[in-house]
Image (cartoon, rainbow, N blue to C red; front, side, top):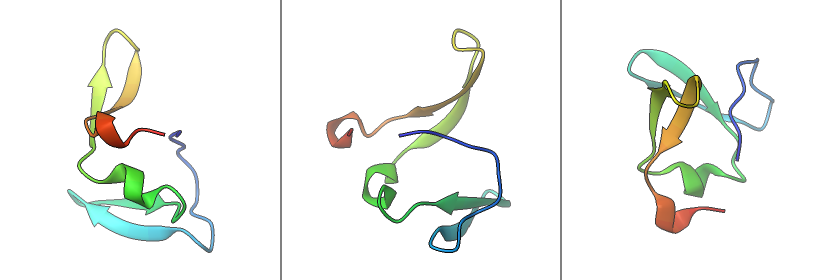
Length: 56
């Protein structure tokens, strides 16, 4: 699973989370439930946290 900062594809589901529009590929949508987007100093960037039991 990855994260990209670009325009959504036609098939993406677009939702607004904390006033930010987020496009989610419908193929991975079930894996995104209960995830949190956070900044990691160790990774020096954005990371997805949580829902480890549903990981790909």
